[in-house]
Length: 268
Image 1 (cartoon, rainbow, N blue to C red):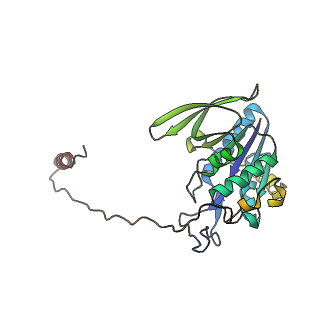
Image 2 (tube, rainbow, N blue to C red):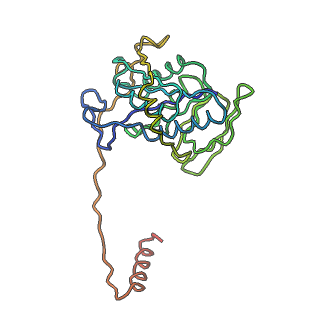
């Protein structure tokens, strides 16, 4: 069974700044980490590999320094890792990113399953995973909290998952190949051993540029190929908090007064 995992290197901070001219993230001077949701995708792929055998290929699109995120995936147990990096990709929105990653996945070879994190903590859109599925013409299953059943054989295979929604949980079945975006409660990511980290440091991780992706349309890459653009980003204004002290001689009386106020405010 061949599983592809798409990961992203993101700034290790919530104080994300945007270049006002390009509408892209300013990454200079900000430490980077593997997107936390993507670690669960890597772990789930490794668990499937241990159960069904096969290979786990991890792909990341980003600047050259994103190779460190791929080495972390190799240290966890991924068989292969590929960096998709080119100046032509700079400034890609979620659509252009999905288009580029889909082209890289096609080049990587046949796959049974694609796993992505629920969303990236820098953009918080959750659009790239489903976008890849659209580009590849396969089923997308988002917000997956558990894989209930997976039968890769006989072809085309079937997968049944549990999705976490605002209204509760939903069980969905789909044919393979499929793409899943996973939630944090699907597993607990493993920690790499020192020997695995050393192996990952020595691993050969190729870099694919636009010229390495067969059939790619240069007009659909980067800023020029992105139909959307970040115009402004800001934090919502803080709300003033008001506190009221309840005078009482004892705890029982204070609790009684509190309940009366909650009932009057129709909170209870």
